[in-house]
Length: 184
Image 1: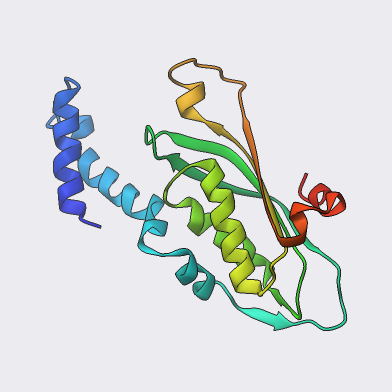
Image 2: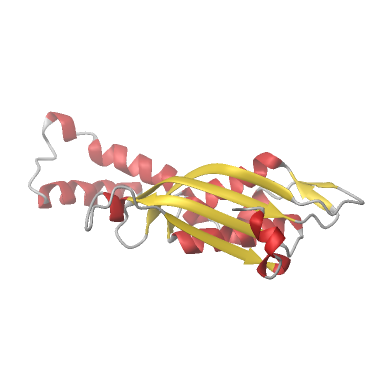
């Protein structure tokens, strides 16, 4: 990530909106924004495959066909259309183990890293499902995300109560209504 270039352009944006980047409250803003971008867009540096490798520590599990379900994983992201915050996002993830399970904290880490990109909520669900599938070796994954988008709540139509729900199904989650209910 080119932090110097980000700082330069944030300074120019401040000027373009009529602010003085040299005034006391804004002097360090370009540097702070560059640091924030490095943190909140960390996921841009990694492919889904690399994230699966990073957080793919699994443990052997035999003789079980029980689903693993994790609910209410909190993440935030930024909409690629307006670079607006997607917030109050809750992710539910379920998968059917195929001889191995992933550490529970790794599920949350996968969700977090996939969200640290300019995203669409629909793509974020797909990315999480694909990463979980690769990391666990299971073709059967379901992901539901519920979130608010500041491009809807703080600008444009300004509908503060609007939220968006997306669901991604891989493998048997596509056709099995009982499995689908695990993430609802």
